Each structure stands twice: as C-alpha cells, then as structure tokens.
Image 1 (tube, rainbow, N blue to C red):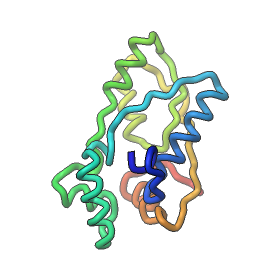
Image 2 (image 1 turned 90 degrees about the vertical axis):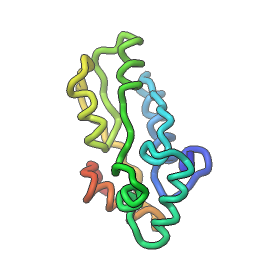
Image 3 (image 1 turned 120 degrees about the vertical axis):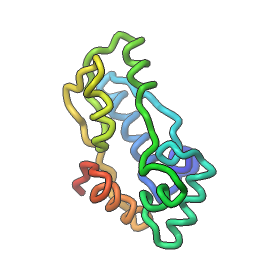
Image 4 (image 1 turned 180 degrees about the vertical axis):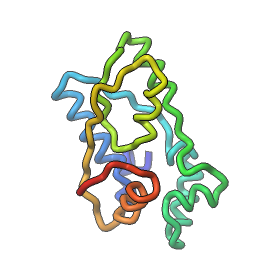
Length: 141
C-alpha cells in the first residue's frame, strides 16, 4: 500500500507493480495481487518498521525487532488462484527466491523466473542492498 498507492520511494513496490502490469499486458499474461503489506506484517507495523529504519535498522532488522520474521508472507493464495484457473505452467516475475520456492512443492511448474529490475533511488538503496545481501534477492543493477 505504501508503495503501490502512496508512491513511497522507500521501497520498490509501486514501480515493480507498474512494470509487472505492463509485462503482463504485453505478454498476454496475468498478475495476481496479494495484499501483504510490509512483507505480511500489516500497514501499522510497517509504519512502525519505517520509524525503526529512521533509527538505522534495515528492513529485516526492523521486522524482527517488532517480533516478526524477516518476511511473513505466504503464497498459497496465489497457488490456489492459479490452480482454480487451470494454470499449470508459469513464467514467474520475481527477484525473490522465497516466491520461487513456494512453487517447488506445488502442481504449478515455473518455466522461468523473469527478473524485475527497478533501478534503486537514494531513498531505497539500503533497502535494495538488504534485499540482495540478507534476503538473497536476485538484483543486478
């Protein structure tokens, strides 16, 4: 919500959503939007995490400081939606290895992982670095 609706530059969410929608349109694909604000911790806790980031914590440290895992999201709803639509193979647009892993024990084959590279900004460079170094995201910019 903070990036997608309010246009926050502290993350890459809004720019990623826009690019993913364009890619889906151009390739006659689909986009499944899961409401999982703040890596699944909710809007209020995400705002608390933002305050902790102002004090120097990175996004993972802020979430764990609040008592959450680094990433609380689950992707079963996306798997269920795809199954309900009869989709058995996908080209998954993501940089996140956890999203790829979510498909490993499902009936849906990931034909390819399609990177989604949004150039970092001064406001989110530390966020990008944390995603790459701590969370293992595939980011090459």
